[in-house]
Length: 220
Image (cartoon, rainbow, N blue to C red):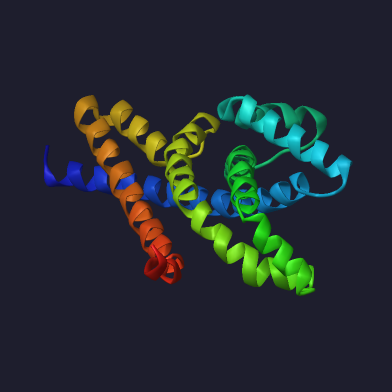
């Protein structure tokens, strides 16, 4: 292949990488916000909120992310709700991964010892202050490793959005194969691209984990 062909491949894949990163970033932000909301609903004293949280997590964990994307993209327009491919990708993946994230958040919050909760109650801390200054910082040390893994899974799952015509990395690879051939070469490059994109996430999560656990090291 000539330099022009290599430039064309690099150009098309770089456009796909940008879309993949956009979907990953915005769907991750949506999933994170929803994960905390659903987790807090699941720990609420309100039975209705607990039931809602349980139904939400079981539904989105128990159904295919691809089918959820298809439903948002192909079925909702039948009832007058049309979403762009990018919006569909962000909402679909955000909803799906928030259900897994909610269980991570809930487990981390529950993991805070009863003794500390009793101490908070005895010292009469306002609930919002106690959550923000005492409970959440400790819970983050339990959340970070599984949340990092979930973020990597989200990045890889963005390949599903190629099925709703969004020109992500996988869609760009498919288009290049249709145009140029060289199937083994193109998919090998795409494979390496996903690895390069996911590798920094693992490093950043480990760095954040070390930062949040510095205060525990002298005691371990």
